[in-house]
Structures are given as C-alpha cells and as structure tokens.
Length: 322
Image (cartoon, rainbow, N blue to C red; front, side, top):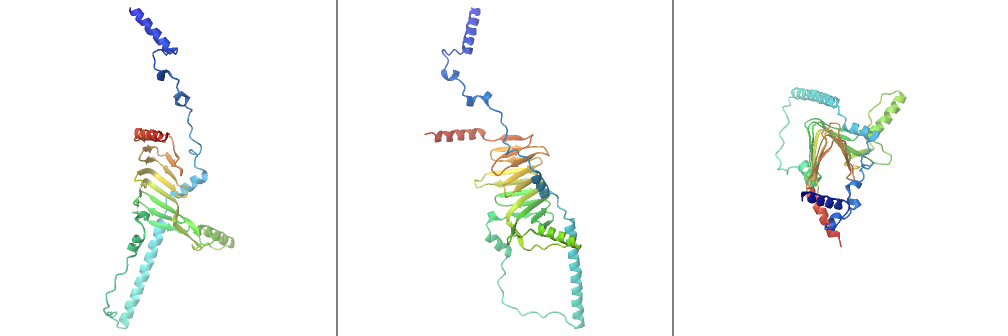
C-alpha cells in the first residue's frame, strides 16, 4: 500500500512538472509576464549624466572655494592701524590740554537745556521691520570676519552659525559666500581682473604695482554664486510643506546658479523618506539641480514608510483608471 502511494505521488509530481493542469487553478499555472519575470530584468547602469565626475575646472574651483583662509596678515594690519590711531589720539589730546592750560580754559560752557527731542530711530529695528523674517539670515561666528572686495567673497571664521526660519547651518572652520559681480556699465571688470591688468602694465613700465580701487562695478549679495562651508558642516532645511531635510559632511558646497550640492567627507543626507550616508572620509554625495543624485561606493541607505508609499502609488493608479 505504501509503495502504491509513493507511485501515485511521483505521478502527480511528474504531471505538474510536465504542465498538467487538471484540478489546478488557472491563475497558478498561467505563464509569467515578461515584465514581471525577475530573470529578464536587465542589469541597471546609472546614466552617465548622473555619475559624471567633476571636471578639472570644477575640481580646481571647488578647492579654491574650500581652501583655508589666511587671516593673520589682516589681523596684524588692523591691530597696527588701531595702535596708530590711538597714538594720534593721545597726541591730539595732549595738544588740547596744553592749549587749555596756556589760555586758562577750564572747559566748554554748559549748553542751555533744550526741549527733549524724540529719540532717533534705531537703524537696526527699521531694517528688521522693512524686511520679511523669511528673507533675513543671521550669521554668527566666534572667529574673524572679512570681505574681499577684489573677489567678492564674504568669509566668516570659526564656529559659524547661520539661522533663518527655513534654514539653519553650523560649521566649525569657515563659511564663504561668493557674490555675483554686477557691472555698472558694459565692459566693466571685477576689481581682481583690473588689478591684474594694472600690475602687468606697471611691470612693463618697471614701476611697483599698486592696489586697484574697486570702482566701476559692485558685488550683489542678492545674487549669490556659491556658498562653501568647511569643518563638520550640519545643515537643516524646511520646505513649504513643512518637511525637514538634514545634511552633514566635512565640507559642503552649494552652487546657487545651478542648484547643485556636493557633500564630501562622511556625507549624510536625511530626508522625510530616506537616510543616505557613507562613513568613508573620501566619500561624496552629489545632488544635481534636477533631483538626480550620485553617491560614491560604500553608501548605506535606509528607507522609511516604503509600504505606505507603494500603497499610495497603487491608489493613485486605481483612481486614474476609467
């Protein structure tokens, strides 16, 4: 009896393997559509436009934007200027005192009391009232601050904190903001370009080069070109829908003209739907203006609410059907 049962089982198994369908539901034995067959899924290669490496020009520009800023000379010049001013002030005070003693002048007579005038308006308060809070960016730093008029770059040094209702960013080293040069008339050149031309002319004439004054144009900080932050950079942005995204890396550059963001050095991006990170110091994440993104090898990605997203997508497809 056991031998007969075994033969029947083998026969049934062989029949199913050969395509027998007696008693088997049709939806089980129907052929698998090609678009659903995972064996026919072609290997995916990212488009070349997404994994395009930085060009030599882009690499050089980014290195310049993130380069450390030497401020020792600027600080020394400023301290010398303050010291010279203090010496001159003491000299003038001594001359005034000597004049008073010589002419027996004890001091200025008290001015007659006048009606109390209204307090002068506070320029800072007027500025704050005239601008929407969403358009104001507060930048604090523990180190030096300077503006390079020749290149149109504003630099904040050491423990920089940027605050805006929709954006906050912190970095330990420096923050550089490059402004767009706006010529006042056609043909105007940046101060740095004019300086180079004048230095070449002076060298030809055998004279000592002089600093070119920044005339004929200006840098417009309403038209920012690039923002470069260095040193454990942390950024948080909230969109119009109230969704917050965060980013962290050793260095971050943002090209305001193209909308491209590059994170280098253990980069991390946290969106409402996913966490993308790479612990390698030489790793990078590049986010393009059209939303494309590329991350170097070793990236770990964690998705959130995938089941809900798929369910919402299926509902949208169902609603679109006639």
